[in-house]
Image (cartoon, rainbow over all chains, first blue to last red):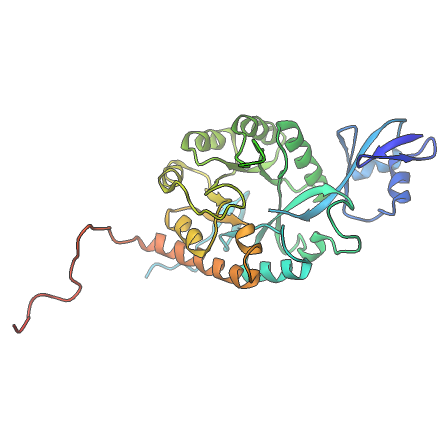
Length: 66
Length: 263
């Protein structure tokens, strides 16, 4: 399926979960937070949150700022 | 002499000794960030929330490794948000990032040239966030009426600007800051616009509970030395406020006695 991650198109196997995406991006164990279609998905739900075609995903982290 | 050893201020049930809050943006690298924050003595540091691997160098340490949340109170901001919706989304992401931490710095901006707050959107976002259980420290204009309204909504601290963000112009309207302080039942912190140490001291002399700054330190030629200067200015200004300054007079008043003159 085709999804969008941080504004960029990305292909992912069908029936993938959010946890699969996190793993595919090498972000396991990193301090991140994720929104799917502008809704926050808590870390504890990554394993069973099924992704759908055309989902828009935002993966964020803390950076320096004022 | 007034004992200032226990002079703390309280935010969301925690006591803080340092009244200098610092941002972590615009530094050359993480080493400089760490050194400046160390020199500032700050206990509360702001961070921003951004897309992973965009706006940061790959392989660079995570800001939360440099500033561990068990040592510093992390204050995530909503910088870059121009409406209620994105500000609220940012706060929810920050709460998740920081394991349920509810303290946030809300700023909803009005335009890119001034970075002045959009007060209408700020009020709406503050209301939504307070209802959702956030402890909201809110960036706003130096407007006493709006400051009071934000307090009534339930913000735990109100943070009027000294001058536009990153401008270094110092406190443009001391009388308004003084009025905001006098009216307030929550901590008032000057946020944004401070340029140098004397500006920070003035904010504290006006009775503010603290000052939040980023560029004034990060854009100094020697940020670590400026961080140290700011720490001293905040302490000096606070002590001057507690000491109660002499009344200003238009004309002179001799310091040496006039009695006993021999001519």
